[in-house]
Image 1: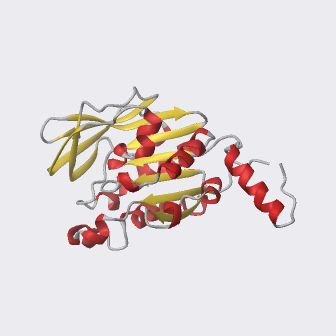
Image 2: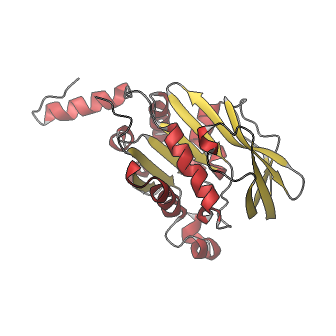
Image 3: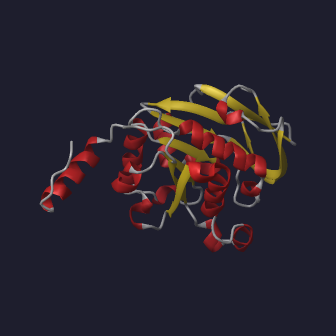
Length: 256
């Protein structure tokens, strides 16, 4: 029986390239940005979440059918190596989102293959990396992702993203950001694709310690809770076929 009170199974995906090649980023995130994001979720949700991390360089980028079938919410951070993500893995993730897996796309994940595939647009935007102050304004105060978040949430230094942001109109807009240069940006956007909930959250350039900020961590944890499936997932046909074949090969019987 489906029990929505069970711990949320979260997979935190990280590109993990800047941390290996850029001394400044490695100093900020010595164990990788993905570990800090994972810690943020575990810290806020406690026993309400089971969190694992996977990275680009893991076999199949860590996103096998088995891993995705055991994932309620996937968070995604990528930037320098979007093109290295295998198309077959992107399609696999896509099908799992349509079947009900939640997706949290963080910062430069706007240009990831999976986010573009789900949006059907370029997801292009304006940007400037000059230590901008960001004010994140809640425009949907009753939304679950906005609960407990300061108004505004201040990010002292971060990369600027500015409009126009080439995405479909969000199903729900939770946050907008303003920057010290006067730009504005839709920085907290909710979408639904198939049975899956998707949240795009703008802050988090690798050159700044943004993911250590309590307010940012709170938003991510809220988003994980919001994005989780609320009804039993119907796994993609490819997963059911592969698991059935493995069970048959092992001489077992796979339940339908």
